[in-house]
Image 1 (cartoon, one colour):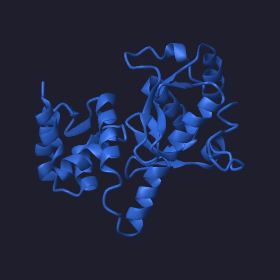
Image 2 (tube, one colour; image 1 turned 90 degrees about the vertical axis):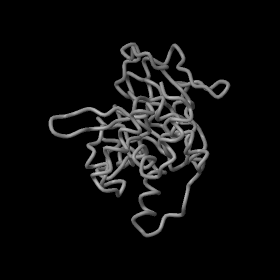
Image 3 (cartoon, rainbow, N blue to C red; image 1 turned 135 degrees about the horizontal axis):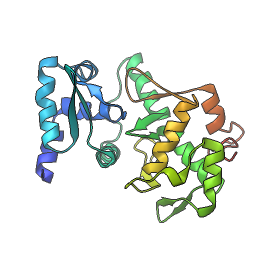
Image 4 (tube, rainbow, N blue to C red; image 1 turned 90 degrees about the horizontal axis):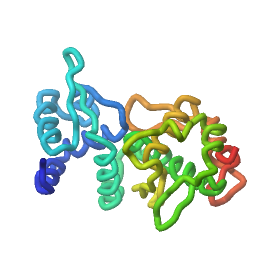
Amino acid sequence: MPDLADVAAALADRPRARMLEELLGGPPLPAGALAVRVGVAPSTVSGHLVRLEAAGLVIVESRGRRREARLAGPHVAEALEALGRIAGDGARPVGLRAVNGQQALREARSCYDHLAGRAGVALADGLLACDALVERDSQFSVPAGAHVHYREVFGVDLDALTTRRPLARACTDWTERRPHLAGALGAALLAAMLDRHWLKRRPDGRALNLTAAGAAFLFDDRRSDERAVSGICG
């Protein structure tokens, strides 16, 4: 079992930290794809992944001739999101592509398996507004009468979400500085929104494209505070 110093040492390398950022998107990535996204030589990726795996941060599996890496679990994503809040926005992006990429991450992104960014906070706000979610002492919970709401609006059966993870958890968003919804419910809602084409994955990172239907569902332009949404409340 790695100790805190081992984990800190594994993170204290910019290419390895960037690999973890890319893996925050959720789906496993081949070593070659990580090399391209991070901008390192393919020959160095294996060594970085060995270090990250030894620290308990990633899991590397062989898929035929290629090796794929993924985060070791939602607990790693939560820790990285917390570190992102400490680190802040980092260096100012240079160039139109970098600026657009940063804006896309702020708008909507996957945080391992749940929705984050402005869209993720809007989802949590909408669920709170229509009493499908309750916030108490900075924690989220699902009221007993909300099962019908999630089934009718999202097609999500809460009784089927039998995992060891908490059903609902408040995860403070590192760009919005407010909570979005994590846990088994957060994962199920992101999957449902992708299935309904309210969100679409991008091929170049963990930012998500919010479709016109998704924007109509999440945001009510008549509200200046961008908090509540008629679509979420059914």
